[in-house]
Length: 258
Picture 1 (spheres, rainbow, N blue to C red):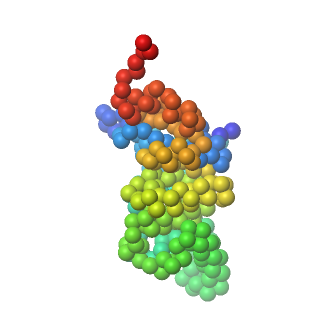
Picture 2 (cartoon, one colour):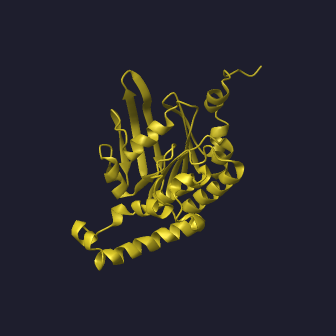
Picture 3 (cartoon, rainbow, N blue to C red):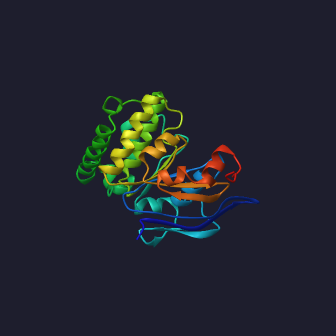
């Protein structure tokens, strides 16, 4: 069985149809890319998976459980985490505080125990901080742990957002344009971290990305959307040769061979 299955997803905003009958499956451990021109419905699809949007039609199954109507926090409890196209960090807080917030689902101490702090709450915080330090080391941001996020360069802020998502210990990680706005060196670092997250940590990844070179190099499967519809899907090689994809990106009409 697929780890994630989206079936016949339809999403409307008034008279605008953002998604129209989109279906696909994502297997455990896969690096799955969703691509398409601007306005194709990629972020809307990710929002339906994470629970920010509820489709008017269709189903979303995660690990064989219907999560279509569950709120975002319930999906997070089941192991779905995400980053955002526009950075959504607490910019007045430090890097390590942002990551500790990502541990909230795993915290057991209640209001009274946490207020007293010493004892079980202290032991629990030490355990969570050790986990967070492992992520900081993994993403090579040791020197930034006490820096205020809002003072960091854009590329590092994107890396911190990835770190906070990993702090949730996800089974499925949704990345919405993780390399948007980055220079070449920052992209190379992010690609390495994404691959290591997928291959070494065994986390399934669904990624939206406009850099086709990156998508075709690292993805196992690619799903192509255009005007809210799925027009192609398969391996990167299959998708690159699909005439519907070529038409959507280049705008050329299909021509018969002479």
